[in-house]
Length: 200
Image 1 (cartoon, one colour):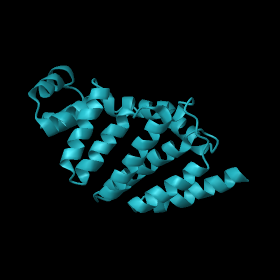
Image 2 (cartoon, rainbow, N blue to C red):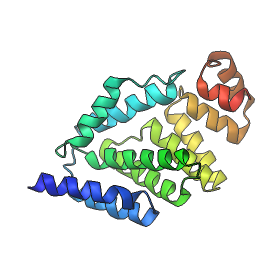
Image 3 (spheres, rainbow, N blue to C red):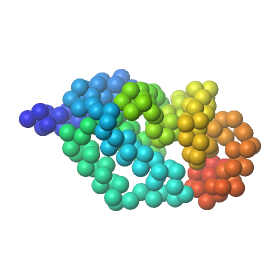
């Protein structure tokens, strides 16, 4: 019965979650209360990392059916440990996708709050922030016109993930460091983000 109630909470919260920063925090806290938190279980961390590797770090979008099925399996099982992080990530994705599909700008307050919560939770549980969270946090802060915070986020993320192509791009865009640009053009010229942001 508890699992059914948990699923109902998740489903009812998704719509509210995608609307405002306050709703994001409220729904996230409700999900978290029902979540088994385990810093030794890295299933959620690993799927976020896999999503990053295949969707953002790879030269082309290499998202596979297998990765999508892993997401679905973890998200649909309320006994998944640390599921609150995964659900917040998926709700963030949903918000970004839905606004893009209708040609609207995402809600920057929602983006900033969601990425703040994601960073805070992953740090608390895993003692590390996944690269994708740095990337999304940069994008959220940039969208909210918080240029200095966005720049600091990209720089910090790149310190932790020095081989991250997206973080190199965002750091270059905010610092105009020609060494980064040269590295991107010489080593990653086929990467879809390099083509979109650096070569245009």
